[in-house]
Image 1 (tube, helix red, strand yellow):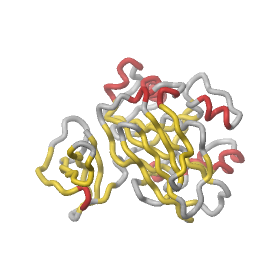
Image 2 (cartoon, rainbow, N blue to C red; image 1 turned 90 degrees about the vertical axis):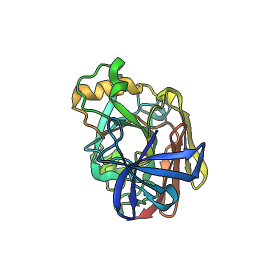
Image 3 (cartoon, rainbow, N blue to C red; image 1 turned 180 degrees about the vertical axis):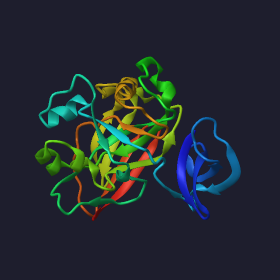
Length: 259
């Protein structure tokens, strides 16, 4: 199932997307009452996907990200791979949806893209063991952990570098029933491939990450965990377009603008 959040002629709603095969041109979106957690309760209203606007598929209370979780990405910046997941927080105000612009802060001289697999939590969870972690996951989406690289290097911590508004595009929807263990991940900037990896290369796997994070903080429905980015990150400039595709989920595309 693909779960999305849309703007429609009467407001905003969670929906399930129904399509014939891979043909999204004729897809319909079915409105879900209240929220997408648990068994969906449909209202009976529907629209054509072409007639609505996709928003960020979820508005999390918090975004937890994992750093240096691909060995080659750690290596490209001269860093060691941490023995445990290295986590940091991105504010909820960083979240934007598909086709919304990433806005470059004027104070930064270098802002980078970072394509990532994102985990969406489906139920409250604390201290969950790794072998039960998947039961707490609603599904998966695509993320861009946009980073002001100059501030990341100068500040000694990553709050400012990772925390600007628009620095966490998510979308285009949440895919449920996906096996995250070996998915292709590709990032393109203006159609040129910059990152090309598989989630099987993750140092700390999804279940272990969820277990680790839940040992630190309570995870709530809708919270998002970014699992790390592979090698190939690089700068983006105003006027460019970033597209991140993850096998079995979809493509997240965002233009880049000056703030």
